[in-house]
Amino acid sequence: MSVTPEQRRRDLLGLRERWYAEGHYSSRTMADALADAGRRVPGTRFVFAAEAGTGTETETGTGTGTGTGTDAGTTTVTLAEVLALAGRAATGLRALGVRPGDVVAVQVPNRLELIVSYFGAWLAGAVVLPVTHIYGSAEVGVILRDAGAKVLVLPDAWRSIDFTDRLARLDGGPGLEHVVMIGDRTAPGAMPWTDLVAGTAQAALPTGVHADDVCALIYTSGTTGVPKGVQHTHNTLLHELRKGDLMNEAGPQDIRLIPWPSGHVAGLLAACSGIVSGTDTVHMDRWNPVRAVELVEKYRCTITSGTPLHVEALLKAAEESGHDISSLRFVQIGAAGVPPALVARADAAGLVMARAYGSTEHPRCATSPLDASAHQRAMTDGLARFGDEIRIVDEQLRSRPAGETGEVVTRGPSQFVGYRDPAHDDSAFLPGGWFRTGDVGRLDGDGRLTVTDRIKDIIIRGGENIASKEVEDILATHPRVRHAAVVAEPDPRYGERVAAFVVLDSGTLDVEEVRELFARHRVAPQKAPERVEVVADLPRAPSGKVRKYELRDRLRAPAADGPVEETGP
Image (cartoon, rainbow, N blue to C red):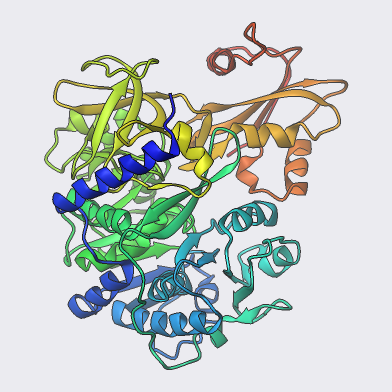
């Protein structure tokens, strides 16, 4: 079943009217929220912590003159200082011709200029497009062209990545008019970051911007392998930010450790979390568990979130190093299968850990409150809260009773308003505005959700979505590959990793050769299969469709059919 564009429009308008009436929505925009936060909590701290020995990367090219604090690879600023820079950035963007509704893409790791770019774009009335900083030029080009981005902000380099080299091979489409580069080097045709924020005038709040206008565009891989632009409005984003703080009762007394990459929806939300409740935030530019426990101890962080990978590594690093992480009181965990034993282990360490369920399209639509029992936090994904709703439907899209398994469908005030390409909306929504998550789960008698499987063919590696079709399409370009099928293989560290089954015309194929193939296609390295299994044929249904569940079962069997090449995570 799919909905027509007209029905989708009616559903959206009806739900929006309801959420205004219930108090979930208001007339405030992100620019209004920033101005309000500047008045209420100007001293809120933003700490940007690079790994030891990489401090210059965090500070390179800032050119702020604000007297920011630095300490061994760490930059600390207040919200007032960030907003002063963001106001100058907004003035600079307007001078470049950026108008309300224009898209400003930001491919920057977790550093000061990232937050300034986000806030500056909103103060200019623009739409923020976070782009994962490890994406290659081919991936970035697809996203920029689909979004119609007008401006791209990126560094000259980060760790081993030379963005000036990537920029030379980037096709951002005809809409990309300006590139702003942070750092000591500026690529031909690009504008130095220091020029963008060189002025002293503070931009006035944008006019002509409505709270129901799109303000953020986040790309996620769909089941087809084609990136889909998820559109959030000022209202959906602000509601998600408010409920996030309500969920863990965060306030000015708290300090939040942020391990998420900036291009992830969790990274975008984390970047903004301080403007709601005045909670200080500590942003890591790259996940390193030893560095993480050092930061928790130094700043007495009280809240964090992540995948099972993050939490398990954090607890292990604390045990091995002796760093004191006793200040941590709550961690929200999701984005991959969560072992119940990990929840118990965190509880034993005095850290309340709770599963949560959500997506880029509908963040955190099920969560557990702090007072939930250990069993509820370990064995379920929580309750629908803060205006969110969850149903379970069968293959005919009829509601299933409590305890019965089916597809998870959701709706709520923090749900996205549709994809950038509206053609994707037809099959994504049911009548009434229900979003089809593509996940399988059940609700118990108290309304607690337990997600058991996924319908959509996505591999979640360390919290990042990887579309199997995208990997299969790249494998198909290899001259010896006749057929390829890619599935998720359980992995104790990353939750899942990419496993490929290939049918060859001749010879063999190993992981190193596959890695080289993916490098030539200029995509993120984690998308390359970490296991390659050569098989005589792929299991297929009478229709010819590959039975991927058989391949997943084979990965769990003690013996594999055919030669296997593996790499470490």
